Amino acid sequence: MDLIESLSSSQPLLHMLTFVTMLSPAAGALVLVLLSISGVSPSERWVAVVSSVTISGAAAAALMLASLVMLRPTHEFDEVLWTMYQVDAYHLDVSVFVDPLSAMLITLAAFVIPVLCRFSGRYLHREPGYLRFFVLMGVATTGFFWFVLGGSVDMAFIGWELLGLSSVLLVAFFWERSETVVASGRIFATYRVADIALLAGVVLLHHYAGDSSWPTVLGIGRDHHTADLGEVAATVLGLAFLLAAIGKSAQAPVSAYILRAMEGPTPSSALFYGTLSIHAGVYLMIRVEPLLSNAPIARGAVVFIGVLTAVTSSLSARVRADAKGALALATTAQAGLMLAETGLGFTTFATWHLLAHGLLRLAQFLRAPSWLADAQGRRRELGGGTYRPAFYLEGLLPEGFRTWLYAAALARFGFDGVVERLFSRPLAALAHLVSTPRPRIREDGGARITGSVFRVRLPDETGVSPPARTSVRPPAPRAHT
Image 1 (tube, one colour):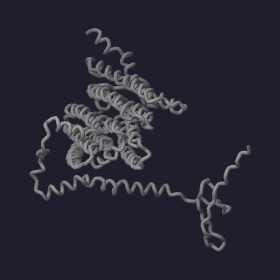
Image 2 (image 1 turned 90 degrees about the vertical axis):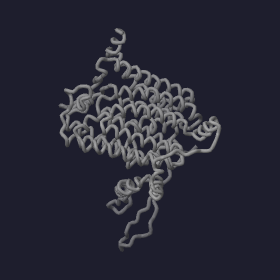
Image 3 (image 1 turned 135 degrees about the vertical axis):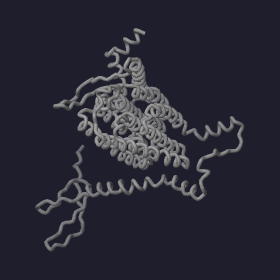
Image 4 (image 1 turned 180 degrees about the vertical axis):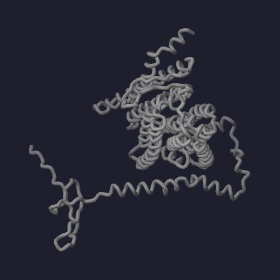
C-alpha cells in the first residue's frame, strides 16, 4: 500500500508517463515521415512495428497514468509542464490535467487504438498508402491524447486540430477516386466552422475569465477556483462550445457529412466515426457542463440539438441500405442522446454511455465488411427459418404519416438542402468571386507574361478588341551532348 501511494505521488514518474503518452505517437509518425522523404522504402512489417511500438507504448503509459491518478487522494493531477509564451497577464502553458473524466477517456483510447493498429496492419496489406495510413494514425493518436490530457482549452484546441486534420486526410486516403477528395473537402469545411467556434470559445474564456485552464475556469475539483461568470457570458460560451460539438460530433443539421466520411478505410472509420473523434464534441460538452448551470438557454439548446439528432439520425439509419452508412447514422444518434443527457445534467451517465458506445461501435465497424456473412452464419447456427421483423413504435402510426416519415428519413429530413442553400452555396459563390483571375495590363500596353498559357485581349487604337491571342513561355534550350 505504501508503495502504491509513493508511486501515485511521485511527480517524476507522472511526468515521464505524461511525456510518453503525449509524444510517443508523434515520434513514431516523425520516424516514418523521415524514412519516406529520405528515399528509404521500409517494408510493411517495419512500418507496422514502428507504429505499433510507439502507439502501444503511449497506450500503456496512458493506462498507467490514469490508474495512478485515480489512486491519488484527490483523484487529480494538475501541473504546468512548460510556459511557452507569456506577456503581461496572458500566458500559454503546456499543462496536463487528469481527473476521473479524462482518465476514463484515455483508458478507452488505450484499449482501442492498439487494436486498430493491429487490425490495420493486416487489413491494408499491399495498399499503396500503407505508410501514409500509419503516419496519420500517429498524428490522430497524438491529437486525441493532447485533446483529453491538455490542462487548458488552448491545449485541447491543438489536439482538436490534429484530430480533425488526420481525420480529413484519411477520408481522402484513396485519393485516386474523385469522390473521396470531394467528401474530404466537405468534411474539412465543416470542421473549419467547428474550429472557429472552439477558437471563439477560447478567446471568450480569456476575455471573461482571464484564463483558460480547466481547474481555474470551470472549477473542476476546486470550488474556490470557479470562475464567476454572468449569465450572458456563460450563455455565449455555452453556445460557442455547442457549435463546435455540433461540427465535430456530426449533429443536426450537419449530421450527413458522416456518410461522406465512410469513403475512408474501415479502420479509420472505426477510429474516428465510431470511437474517438465522433465523441470529441460530446466530451467537450461534458467537460464544460459546469458553465451550463448558469446558462439555461445554452442548456436548452444542447438538449434540443441532441434530441433532434437522435430522432432524425436513428430513423435515417433504419432506411440505409449500406452497413457503414447505417452504423454512421446510428452513431450520430447515440451521440445526440449523450448531448441530451449532458444538457439535462446527467454527466456521469453520459460518460459511461460514451465508453460503452465506443467499444460497441469499434466491434461493429471492424466487422462491417463481414456483416452479411455474420448474419447468415447466425441464422444458420440457429437452424435457419424465415426472417421475422421486430415490432417498432411507428407501426402504430397512420399509414400516410408512415409513408411521409419514410420519405423524409430517406432524404435525411432535408438537412442537406438547408445547409447547401444557407451556407455552402453562398460561401462557394463568395470564394469564386474572390478567386476569379483578372488579367493585369502593363502601363506600356503589353501583356504581362506569367508563364503557362493564357489569353488576353487588348484594344487597338480604334477601340476594337482584336481576336484573342495566345502567349506561351518559350521552351528552355536543350543541352548539347
